[in-house]
Length: 465
Ligand SMILES: Cc1ncc(COP(=O)(O)O)c(C=O)c1O
Image 1 (cartoon, helix red, strand yellow):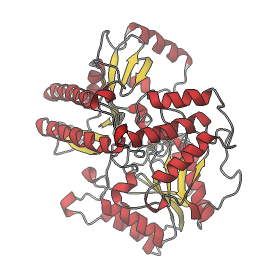
Image 2: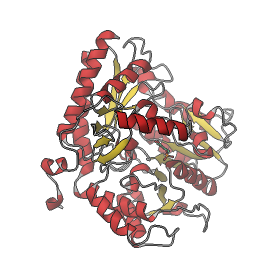
Image 3: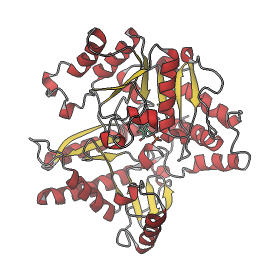
Image 4: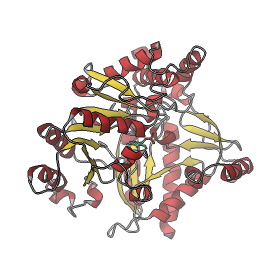
């Protein structure tokens, strides 16, 4: 294994040299023409180009080149999809070889499918390791969440699913019902019945109005009470689905006791305990899985995004063998385990192991966290900095006392960073959280440079806001 560790210089080759390099206004002329065409032809649901005003030509590691030749440092990795970097050459080679052979086989096995099943069984969390099954259904994370809901229903009494305020689980009917954001849902209700949202410990804005030092885990006690009190209104749930660290709602890290308490409650009350690892999983947080920060082993974890290696749509769920009670065709789909996705995912796991990217995420994340914390001390509009590994959030507020969310300020920060060649991602309950989720292969140099530009932009705008 030692021989496989690559040096910082070798990591450098995975990205465009000299990033960022901005040679036109953003968007440049070629990007503008493509964006105009997209506007005429694409659906009005398209959303990212409203903020990220460019058309893309090449992705390389943690860098992106647009059609005008501008090169950006990318802090999004396609929302945690390309943990091993855009077009990772090792993964690409495996994919190209596979593409020459066969690309679609439904769930008839290929070596690529076996490779990824073996790899997932090996890296599964806790006592799921070597004691798990994997289901691949449809190709997106939302389908993985649908699978989790079905697994809970077939294994347990009842049909209700407990999910959490601030949670994002997707946009198909079941997963959208589990998602907390009201605006995504209000035009499409009713969705599936039986979803119960309960508070999540967003400690910076505690739903129970507590300060961290005066907290008695009211959030956990409330859920406990739902189970304990015969008059709480909660009829026996089949499952609970929780992000061990919330992503879309602003990188929210719960106390260890909370996730441990949920696991215990589920076990005591015969509820399937599912961690949604779609965004936090596969090394992103400095451990293979988000749940490992809390020393719990869920009954099942949902996987998508980076499991497709370098952007292939592949999604599924790893679950303990004892819950494998469903029958042939019970969670089917035409693309139930796309072969290129399987090949890419297995190669990406191998690359992550060989190049020790999980450790790298933890180390680079520590550095980035400290840099962002220092920035918080220097400015008036950063209320909170949170993170584990390369999964970091910076929450913007109008002032630190009132904590009023500063969505417009973040919009300006993101736009200015883009003009200077840095892609900063947005999130949060009020879209006031800057997210840093770069490829785990990012070099120290690119990370430092990107954070330096972000810091300069924030300091400049902080003075005038
Ligand atoms: C935690 C989590 N679950 C589920 C999903 C849904 O995945 P997809 O967008 O691939 O359907 C996402 C997407 O961001 C997510 O972050």
